[in-house]
Image (tube, rainbow, N blue to C red; front, side, top):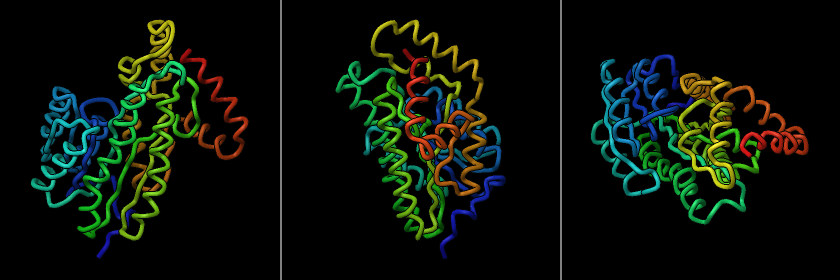
Length: 281
């Protein structure tokens, strides 16, 4: 008997297993700890082994069962091995969160083909690899579940200073909406999460192409810090979106505005996007 997606009530995740990529810091870490606090057992991966170990230790301190793997989500074989290790430990997975991602700031003329390959391999193919590794077993299990894919507000409204990043996040949104329709008969929900300006380490780790990179990074980090929207708040919103079985879930006020404008008034949306892009120049 298939359990419909709406049956996953995130207020109490006892007896549930949640798999999360990119769990070594930021949104992935906060979501892992929130799921653990609500009773879930966890399968966690990240390329950052030290950060991953810290997240796992914090979750285990709550009494949760946790399996971890060092994984580069751009490598499909590593993702398949992570899923195999997860299924060796647990009976199955109830929720998969494809969170791992990278940023790159720059217009098209400043973005190299190597940059494009890097962004696509992680932001888009990393999501594909996560889905490929876990979804078939979820379907075969026949107990429903939920898939969460991290898109972005930049996947709702294009940004000329985030050309490659926007392209990959638009792709994740499209993948998620199509996948939602395909998996609905199997009782598996799919949600695309679209965070806005979130204060995480991505402002410090994202490469910046073009002129005045140091000054632009300082301006960007200052803007995100002043905005003050934390990864912990995003984690709470992700579980709320799963609980409500949302197809697309903007997170933070600016993401909601972008979502509304992109659908109601595209010309105005493009004007707003151009203004927002000036922050990254």
